[in-house]
Picture 1 (spheres, helix red, strand yellow):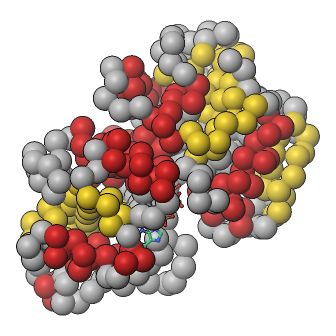
Picture 2 (cartoon, helix red, strand yellow):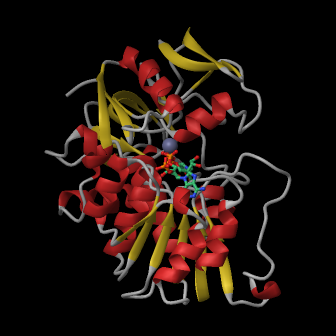
Length: 353
Ligand code: NDP
Ligand code: ZN
């Protein structure tokens, strides 16, 4: 089978590999829709997870089951499925402690295009199929469905971890597809006022549709100050970080009110340490907490996110600004994700309607 791989840091290319073997609890799946991610860009061109050779990329997919192991009860060949970006080891100690995304070590639930071949291939392997796959609801568009495995799961996690009070104010720093999903998640969770921070016009348009009440440009001066001024000096009840480099933590802490949670979904690619503003953090005593998390995976999570789409709480297809067709075009889609033209939110690749 062929797949689009990271050949080494900074280089991608198509390679041939043997079809993956599956264990008794696993499934072999072929993709029907794919999406490249900012994380794929960080992996290849930022060296985010270190050197990898001939590792097939991609972790965002909808698929069709081709083969299942003897112990798989709920899925059979031909089923159309949502494949979570994160496929934890269910039954691991981390899962039993309540943190399945960290099973097998820090970020260990992230297997595709990290510890094993990813989904940008003719076929891919899914561990513990009954626990990780979810049926794709009939009638859901592939453009909407393919946002579920990572964008909705990660963005909503950002909102969930932020402990937003009903009617509370939230600032979402960064409104690419992760931040936009966080805006939608905050609105669904009952936020009152939602500040969305970004500059790309398409993103701003979708942020408003997802419930943003105030748009802030980080290019118009200090982000935190703009938010503090707009809230009569109070700051916001919750902050979600979904973009920017390490100094965005300064904005997050300075914009946060006492009693707030600063919920991070962002990847920080530089520096041995990250900054916290000493005064803004009340010299360590400001009642401003941090929360972090890796995208949640697993079947129940995917089924619940699918219900949010099915029952029209938000429309993730609004983020699919660039639609490609055929497995081969995943290369062009990934390069587009790397270049991030200003009209891009998220490219998707449709393989089979
Ligand atoms: P994008 O690059 O599409 O979006 C980034 C956003 O951040 C843009 O809106 C951009 O604004 C904004 N931004 C840039 N600089 C600043 C700044 N100084 N202040 C405020 N906003 C700023 O990224 P994605 O949405 O695809 O991904 C966001 C992050 O989430 C990435 O780091 C990605 O690796 C990470 N991620 C984390 C996961 C997890 O499991 N925790 C899973 C998936 C992704 P502008 O409108 O000007 O472009
Ligand atoms: Zn992703």
